Image 1 (tube, rainbow, N blue to C red):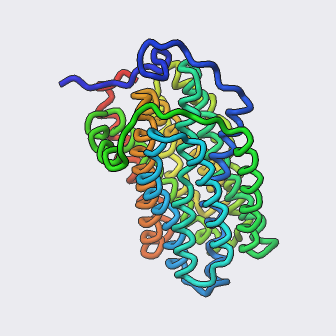
Image 2: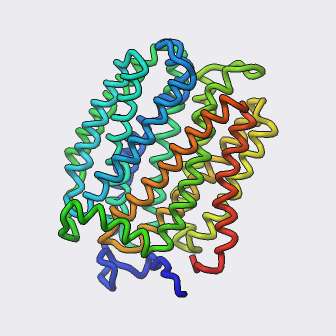
Length: 409
């Protein structure tokens, strides 16, 4: 049975045929899009270094505050499923602006939470509001010329991981100095500045298809069934995100206990170490353009898997955690860039739905990993978290190895 492979980016115009190459996307616009992605998605990760502080301040258990934080990922998955496909049939500009505005409101709600119910609902709303993140990535892929698409996607996705890590780092350091609520008010203020920039400079786009909303949603199942490359990318992405979220969801708890006995500032410092992986995203995108994304994905899945061996063996030391974080985030970043480079090269008119399917499964994997890590931490401690995270990666790595002959890239 023949398997459909992704079309090489360099041979495909925006309409999926031999159309002339699109103009190259300017560096300033690429930077704005990367900043947007980083700031919007980063809002979900301010909480992770602060979990212990929030639990104490609101009188919650570790399980309750961990479950509330997991709702951010669940909310994002639901929002992506119901809203992100609209980018295929509507102008993306107003949709991205609405997403940023709602994120501002959700941050204010989190900052004024006073119990487990209000915190949980606010986290869910914050996740739902992040839809603009991946609509911005698909916008960048559409604006880029085919020969630069991998690099542009890599740079914008690098903004995603940089924002995620910086937000975690900033909240970790500030958590030692100020009330955790003020961190969310500060984040809302920064988003107001971003909203003004986007209102001024974000370009409009014309939809490529006409389709009703219900038909748009149901068409995603047909796309998923007909695109083996997409299905494979969903598996690779969801398993790597599961491992990633499992680690970060429980790190603050691990750091607070003997023999480490550290606070939120150290959790933030470890996040800062991972920025090197985010900075390499553009380079990884260029490698994917040149050599094909699938070999890059396989190599860096092994990188990520090895990091959990480091965490298991040397996770009781700050040096071991630091080395593991650098290795893990480099691997996660490369897999994510490789996956998106593949799926955004398939069918331009389906780009938002392709992104929806991938991102929904990606963050569904993150939700699974976060929930599994809270359970593993409660019953088996740090070693249980490392083992369950490694198992996610073993599944995707074995699949990659056993299907390596099916795909050319």
